[in-house]
Figure 1 (cartoon, one colour):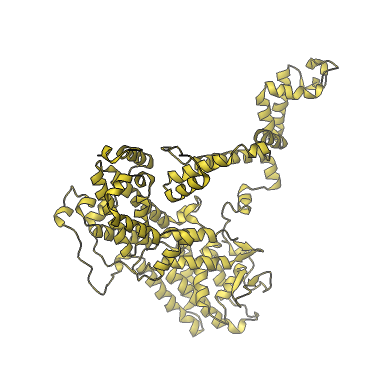
Figure 2: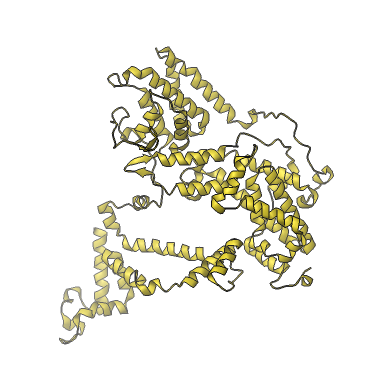
Length: 597
C-alpha cells in the first residue's frame, strides 16, 4: 500500500507539474487558464495527450486504467477487427506453413480447393507460427497490464493456479500423505468412487485412497488393474505419496471392519510392492529406497510367518532389479547366429569411408536398427505421461523420447543433405535410389520409425521438388516409395500401419509418432471428474503405452559394425533454408532437363 501511495503521489505530481500548478490549486479553473465557458471536463485528456508518459504511470497505478487502455488499443470484439484478417490471408498462411514443413500432399490439396495462386518460397520460417508466437507474447503483455500486483496479494490470485484451472499447465502431483485423509478413515460413497456403467466393478474415477484400496483388496487381486495403476500413477501422484499410502494400508487398525483380513491385505501390499520394485525400480530415489529397505528389514521380525516370508521375496526383487539396471551384466542369447555383415572390410577401416558409396544398403539399415533400438528400449512409461516430451516444464522426464525424436530428425535431414550435396543429377539419382533401398530394408526389419524417417527426408520440400532427379531413378523405385508411404499413411488414424504392426513378429521398432499423437488426444480428457481422479483416462493411456513398450525386450540379432555406426551417429546436416537454396541451385524453377548437369 505504501508503494501504491507513493506511485499515486508521483502520478498526481506529474499531472500538476506538467500544468505548472500546485496540487492544492487543482480545483481552481483560473490557474488552468480555462474560462468559465470552456469544457473543463476534458482538461485531463488534453494533458495526457501532450504527456503520454503520464498515461503509462496511470495504467501502472490504477488497475481500471489498464482495462481501458487494453480496450482502446486492441478493440476486442469489433467487427472491423475480426474482418481485418481475410479468409484468403489465413489460407495463404496455412499454405506457406505446409510448404515450409514439406507437407506437399496437403499443400497441393489446399491450393486446389482454395484456388490460391503460388505462394512465396524461400522464407526462413513458418509465418503462421511466427504470428502465433507474437500473439502469445502480446497476450502475456496484456495479462501483465490487467493484473494488479497489490490486488493479487490481497485476493491471493496466483498465475500458476489460474493456468492450471485453464488446463494450460500441469497441476502439482499429490506428494504429502500427512496432509491427506488416512486411508482407513475414508468412507466409501459416490463422493469417493464411481464405476463404469457398462463394466461392473471397473473404476471410472476415485480418490487416491480408494484406488490404493482397490490395489490391495482382500476380496480379489486384479493383476491388470495393478499394472495399469503402477504404469500411470505418476500422472497424478509422486512415488513418495504412493509408498506412504501403501504403508497406511499395511497398518490395518484392530477396530477396522477389515481386521479379519489383516494377513491377506498385508500380503497384497507386499505383492504390489514386489511388482513396483521389479517393473518400476527407477521410481525409488535414494530417500525413498531407504524407507523401502527399512520396511522390508522389519518384515523378517514379523510374528506372522506368512508376512515374514515377504522379506526374501522383496529382497530378491531388489537384487534382480539392480542387476538388470546394469547393462554389462546382461548376456543376450539368440537361437541362431547373426547374419554375416554385408561390408567390404577393406573400405570399412579406411579413413575415407563414405557410407552411402562404400557400404551395402542392407547393412546401413541394420546399423540404423541397432542404433535406434538402443534408444527405443530405454523409453520408460513415465516419459509418456502428461505429454512430458512437449512441455518445457516436464521435458526432463522424457529425455529418451526426446533423443528418439532428435534421432528421427537427424536421419531425415541426413537423407535430404546427402541427396542435395551431390552436384550432378546422376549422383543425386544414385543416392536417392540408395536411400529408398535403405528404407525398404528398414521396413523388412520391422523398423517402422526408421522407415518413416527416411520417407520424411525424401518428402522434404527441398528434395521433393527435384522433378528431374526423380525421373532418373525409374518407376520401380518410385513404386517402392509409394508402397512405403501407403503403409505409413496417417489416413484413418494410421489404419494400415496399425494393422501391419499387429501382425509382425519382433524384433520391431514402432513408429513413435503414432503413439505420441494418440496420447495427445487422450490427454484432452479431464484429469479429474467431480473432484475424483479420472482413472478411465489412465486406462486408455495404459493401452497406448503398452503398445509402445511391447517390443522393447526382443533385441535385433545383428553384428554392430563400429566404424559404420560411428559415422551414422555423426552425420553433418545442412539447415532447411540452406537445403532449399541448394535445391534451387540444383534444379532451378522451370528448368528443362538439358539445362541441368
